[in-house]
Amino acid sequence: MGISILGMGRYVPEQILTNDDFTRFVETNDEWISTRTGIKKRPMAGWEPTWYMGSQAALRAVKAAGIDTADIGLVISCTATSDFHTPSMASVIQNEIGAVNAAAFDLNAACSGFVYAVDVARRFLETDDSLKYVIVVANEALSRFLDFTDRSSCILFGDGAAAAVIEKSDKLFSSALRSDGSGAGLLCARALQVAPEVAQESGFEDKFPDMPLHKLYQNGKEVYKFAVSALPRSFELAAEKINITKDDIDWFIPHQANIRIIETAAKKLGVPMEKFIVTLDHYGNTSSASIPLALSEAIESGVIKRGQKLALIGFGAGLTYGGIILEY
Image (cartoon, rainbow, N blue to C red; front, side):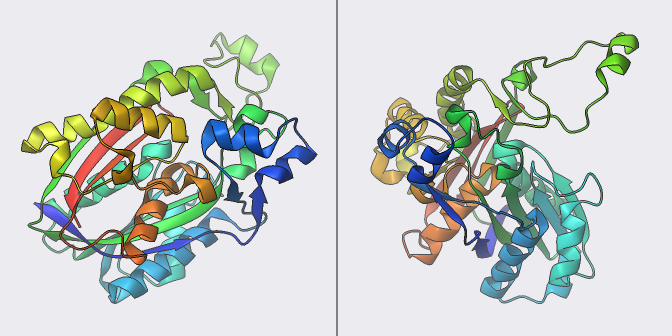
C-alpha cells in the first residue's frame, strides 16, 4: 500500500537573518558562509512558538487538500524543538486546526523526522481501515538552542514548518529507516540538566561531556562524514525493496543541511545536481522541516508534478537516516 499527498502547506517567520547579519556577533562574512554551506539567509522565529508555526503550516495544508479537519484521524508532529516537555506539539496543533476526532503524538528523529513520520503515517493508514487522513507536521525553532558564539554551527540553522495531508492509495511507495546510536554524541542538545553534584553522587557518567548546557553541539567533521554516506544509502535501501533505480526517479529531495553534502551525495549516486531540489540558500537547515519545505515549494511552483517519482532522503541527530520513494 502506498500513500497520496493530498495537500501541503508551509510557514516561515517574517524575521530573516542574512549572512551579513552574523558579522555583528561572530567573526565571519557572507563569502565564508555561502561558499562553505550554500546558505545566504534563513528565517528566525523570534518569539513565534513552534506550535504556532506548525499550526499555520497545517491549516494551509488542509486548505490545499480541500478536506474537513474533522476527518483527520491522526496528527503527527515531528520536531526536536518542542515548546513543552508536555503536552506534545501534535496535541496543541490538533486543537488549533480543529481536528477534533484525531489522535496526536510527537516524533523526534531530528532532521530525519519528516521521513520517519511519513513512514509511520503510512503504517497507520495500512492497518486501520477507519483512518481517513493523517496530517504530518514538521515544525522547528532551532534558533532557541543555538550557540551564537560558535560560528561553525549558528550560521547553519533556520526556523520554519511544513505539513502534508496524507491518505492511503495504491501508488508506488517504499521506505527504509535506520539509526546509528554510536554517533549520538556528535550532534546533540540537552533537555533537563541534573545538578553536577547530584550527577557525581549518582555514579552515572555524563554520556556527552562535550555538550554545552542547553545549547546545540555539533562535531561538524564527523557529521559530514556520516552525512555524505547516509544520504545515498537512504535512497539505496528504499530502492532495493522495489527494484527501482536512480534513473527512475524524477526528483530527489534531500535534507537541506549543506550544499557540499548534497553535491557529494549526488556524485556518489551518479545523479546530476539538476535532479535535486535545493532550497537551503533561503531557508538554511530547518531540521525536520527542511524536506517538506523544499517539497511544498517545488509543488507550489509547478516544478514537481503529479505522477512523478520522488525520493525523500534524510539524516540527522541520533544518528538517524532514512529514505522514502513515492509517486506524487
